[in-house]
Length: 107
Length: 112
Image 1 (cartoon, helix red, strand yellow):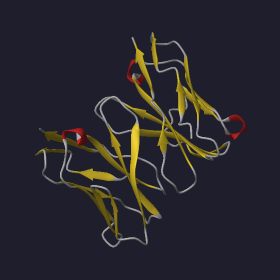
Image 2 (tube, chains in turn brown, yellow):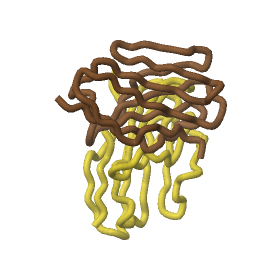
Image 3 (tube, rainbow over the protein chains, first blue to last red):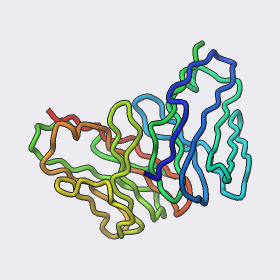
Image 4 (cartoon, rainbow over the protein chains, first blue to last red):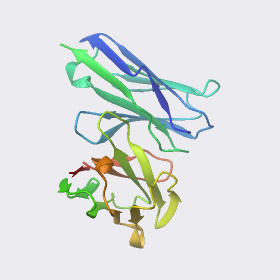
């Protein structure tokens, strides 16, 4: 399978803490994308990082990309209860998703 | 801009019946995807179109599933005959090549 694989499978934190989740992939990529899915809803695109970028920010989100290790991380700072969702990664060469990371932020 | 539209939103059918889902992508998006998401799992790519050509249908159960994208715009996904294990949410997404995907709200299928 060439899909992105998210890690950990589940993460539970308190509101205000930071959450870090990781994504690994197997092939060379042009870009890597992170998505969020709230329960019962469609996926929402969060951030896209291109292969020539190492870090990208969007509000409370920070994404890093290490092409030598074929991995990416998503950091959510100062988490909120509304961040509770499943998070997925995918890359342009193969838009397949792994099982995702289920994040629970406790108020 | 208008988002990805899907219909119906919900469908309940009996096993061995047939069902069809419709997707209207964002205007100008050449790439269209259909995913199947079973409860508790990540979305599984069924088929990817580039305009009206198939790019990847390696995970589409072709004995019962079919999809088409006539004129490179709207797409339909059909299941015939349906099985109990087809109960899932069917997601449609569209994108410009090598850009992020925009997902529709999905169609929740229940097969009884």
